[in-house]
Image (tube, rainbow, N blue to C red; front, side, top):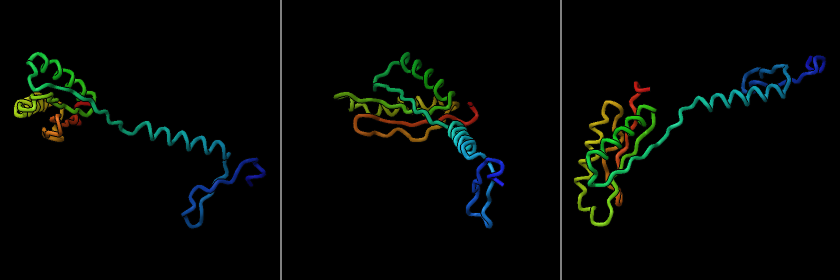
Length: 136
């Protein structure tokens, strides 16, 4: 039948008993499969990670400015990595850095949730946040 129509016999489900075959144009079948895969790939959620950097002695105005950017990032659905970078002897102010990050998390609690509490890794104290579902 496939030869009479000038088409190809394509096996659709080889695991089924009996195997399922269809008479179609093979090139068109491959094209449609590729388009279906492309559509599925485009619909998957892409996670964006945004970073915000603080110093241990960040002033209120700078804090508010970075807070405004963080709100925008979380509203867009991105993950947020806020960190305090300690240079030289400023590592003595670890408690200031932790207080700063916890205050930052408290200001953003209506926009996102904390995934990882502030943790010191080398010269950086890192905190991760992700957006709440209802913001999108």
